[in-house]
Amino acid sequence: MKVTVACDICKKVIPVEEAQFDVGNEWDLCPEHFKEQTLIQAKQKRAELATWLENTHLKNLRELDELIAELEKPERPELKAILACGYDSEAQVTRSFGLGMQVCVPADMTEERIIEFSQYRNPCGTEGGWHIRKEGDLLADWPCVFLEGQRERMPCSSRPGFVHVILDA
Image 1: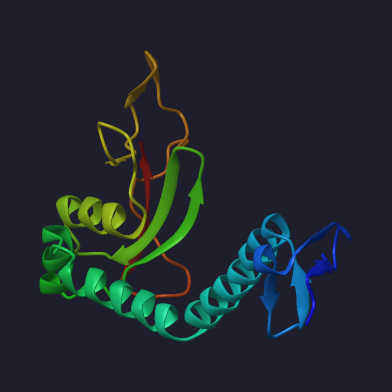
Image 2: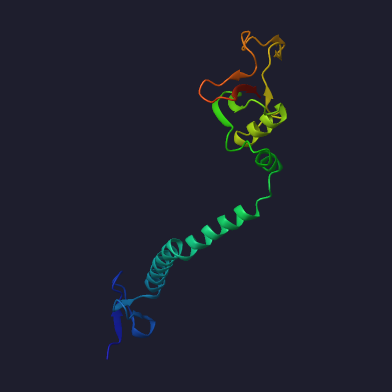
């Protein structure tokens, strides 16, 4: 019967009663290296389990959380107004630039609905929100010349009954 053993890592000779035996790897270890090896194995097992969970159950939980969040979103009143007026599928944002945008909307769409649609499709992000560009508007204390004498509602060349409107933030 052995009275002493050498640690398989540091080669330190220790009494058998102080040695730790790693059955899986069949190592004789001193107490310090036994703790170190146990910690390494525990971290490896945890990482493997975390990867497995991430790819299976946690992925499913994240997908369910996203679905729940989507279903619990408060209804947007501007969306209801747009859908109620029947313009959502017909009106389009045709250009977006800097602090402005152009929309193509039915010719009979009111200014209020144009602004609601524009805010829904492309949220302005400024305190004043979108407003329709009109000849003579003052932008930074100078008259708006961007319409260059054109009407604020220009007929669309490819969609009869539709007009293009420019909005500014």
